[in-house]
Length: 284
Image (cartoon, rainbow, N blue to C red; front, side):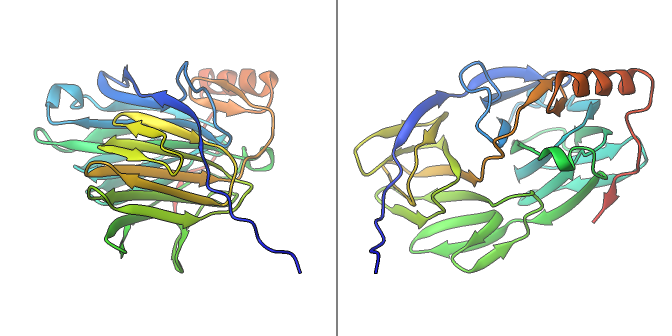
């Protein structure tokens, strides 16, 4: 009988969040999709927007196209309205998420519904496998599942955590958690050994079992292993993502993510000729 050997994941790289301006002037921090970390298979992009200055977010993201991947927008605090070119609309409020499959093509806008106060959220881009890049577009709004586990507050955003399941519309194993810890509290969880994983420290500071630390506004790319454990050195907010890599070629240009340059050229041509949107995005 084989004895299971547990291994804690260690920090492979620490990535600083870089301040960028996107959309129509939205200030945000980019952790994945930056010069420091272009891609962490299957994570294409990870942005955090957090400001109580309306000038940093009020203009939002006017109509823009996507093809070949999925977006997962998590609104920690505030409200956004989503509209697409086919007439579909949706509102995203505090504690809610929107999962969108761009598939064969969507053109949409994301505009804040608030004129003042704190706006805080994240947008994660998930790559789609080649067989699904031209799938029918869809979107779905849903609420984070609030959990309390051993003095740790967790918002379950996707996947299964300790027997509680949040719907996962990705095409592979994907666990996504918003973790809140007070100083001195540990978080520990077993994950599959074949996933890529990251920890983003939005607030506070955490320490891994080997003593390595991750400071606020930094993302840690983790190595292999089946256990993730860290301790809060201060009151901390940590975003944890784990997903099975696709191991497929990636061709990307702006809002289009395909497998070959030829597919990117086709997406650009379709958009320029008004043929990008082939089917109405449905709310599932």
